[in-house]
Length: 255
Image (cartoon, rainbow, N blue to C red):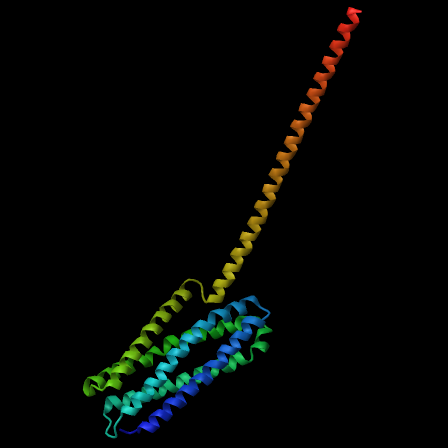
């Protein structure tokens, strides 16, 4: 093997540390946006991005560790499939590191960007989802080549890599389908939040209108009841006066 056990352990530790260094700042900064941003849509988007960032970070970690195991299994006499797979693994790891560094850099200036509104965060979320889908162009051929290598070697580490890459692709395909559906039905999650806010505003206006209409109906009913009571009181007063007058007249006649 090209890589000794000690070197493999060292590479795994380095990859784990690199993954933590790339993931922790994103999570921390998004938490800041969620709690401190002056824009409601920015807070909502940050809240929505946190779960996807954590899922993506797990997938990134899987791909990094798979890359380490794949490189550890290469011998000095690498065939064409292994050479092509090595190139894909190197491109994939470089893409993961570069995309995460770019994301950290963009989010780290959130206070300056947030002053101009939430569009920058919408674009960043769109870019993140797009990268997660496009990376399948690299991961799927990598899985195919790793399956070929496993079929020839029957090594357990290659089998683990095939299973891990299959799970990775399955999750990314599912996320990609959700991303495409969002684009077809009106855009990103923030657009959805904006539509929900508009619907809530309309509902609030409708509720206010309905409340005003109900209040007017109640006032009209009270006024009607008051008129009825006043009419009945007037009739009762008139009837009482007529009775009193009749009684007085009858008494005078008797006298």
